[in-house]
Structure formats: structure tokens, C-alpha cells
Image (tube, rainbow, N blue to C red):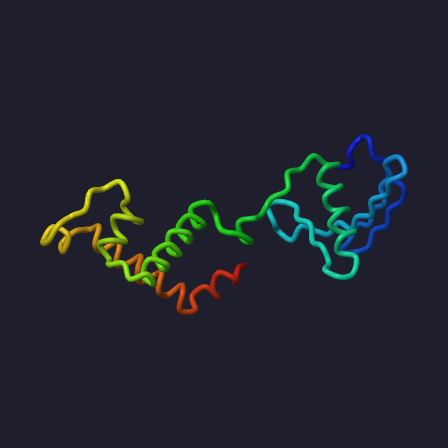
Length: 153
């Protein structure tokens, strides 16, 4: 749907693409629209070449002109929960490097609002098991697991 303030200057269609040139005053916006391939929401693909800045500017103008909200799709970046979990794992990894014990990590990072558990209560607690699981994940993350964060799809 073309915004009312823009006018269609020319267009061309082939089997897979629909090319449009839109005008708004002296501004021109050239679009290549492709079949959505089953995606739920439209996406903008920007080629990374010498004209990247121009392409990004045109993409942002398109987003503003159509009134759509730009954002990161879930497949590109972590959710808020995943981001908080990764931040916690990095804090745990830092504490490990500084020599903190599992109990220190548990009550400073993982369960900061709980009072420390003592002796046998700590040994058999769910808090200890959960903390040890997070420590294991933090170690995996720092020992090469961070590469998996770069893969998405």
C-alpha cells in the first residue's frame, strides 16, 4: 500500500519482483518488492556495498513513509529474557574468574534477595543445584559456546 502523500512514478513487474519508483515532492524512492516466501511480516533486505548508507537511508524513509515500526526480528537478536539470562551468565563468569565460590555466586548474583543458606541446608538445596547449573552454562559460554550466539535461523 502506497502512502497517500507519495505518487507512483513508474513500475515494472516480472515473475518474482515488483519494481516501483515513488515520488514525494523532489524525493524519489525506488523499491523492489519480492514475494514474501511465507514470512509473517514484511522485511527489508539491504545490500552491503559502497551504497550502504544510501540504501539504509532509503529503507528508513520507506519505514517512515509507510508508518511501519522497524525492529529486530526474533531470529536476529535475543529476546529480553534471553538477554537477561546472558547478562547473568557473563556476571557469573566474571565472578568465577575473581575466585567466587558457588555459594557467593548464588546469593550475590542468582538469588540476591535470599539470605545465605548454611551447611547441610545449602548442600541439599535447589538453589545450589540451580547455581551449579548456571555456573556450568557460564563456563560453556566462555569456553567457546559464545560462537553459537552468532548463529541464527
